[in-house]
View 1 (tube, rainbow, N blue to C red):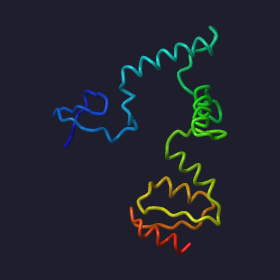
View 2 (cartoon, one colour; view 1 turned 180 degrees about the horizontal axis):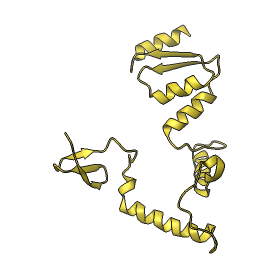
View 3 (cartoon, rainbow, N blue to C red; view 1 turned 60 degrees about the vertical axis):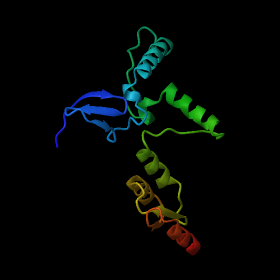
View 4 (cartoon, rainbow, N blue to C red; view 1 turned 180 degrees about the vertical axis):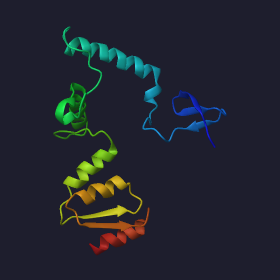
Length: 157
């Protein structure tokens, strides 16, 4: 069936036939993309930051303009990383664009060739891809949600 989306609000999308549907297609899990209060807070912070970080001859900034590595670092990203490190009592923290990017980055770098990694057979593909990109060669799968099979694999290691 074809649906025409014409109005959005928080977690639900109203379609032409007026059925309420839960939005499983976006990354807006908390509904902040359509939150009026959040829009006001972001606008206020943008104006404050513009006055603080830009002199009158500087162009207005509306985004990172590039990857963080090259030109997209920001006060906000560094501040959030420091706060998260403090919150979790760690020396530092790092932000990733998505869980997908985090899985590829971390799982391709941390597990060693001698390590064993046990995975639920239905784990997200980004976990598998991250491990395949790295040095780990001992990746073992167990049936989805099977604690019994997980225990069996653990006993063999």
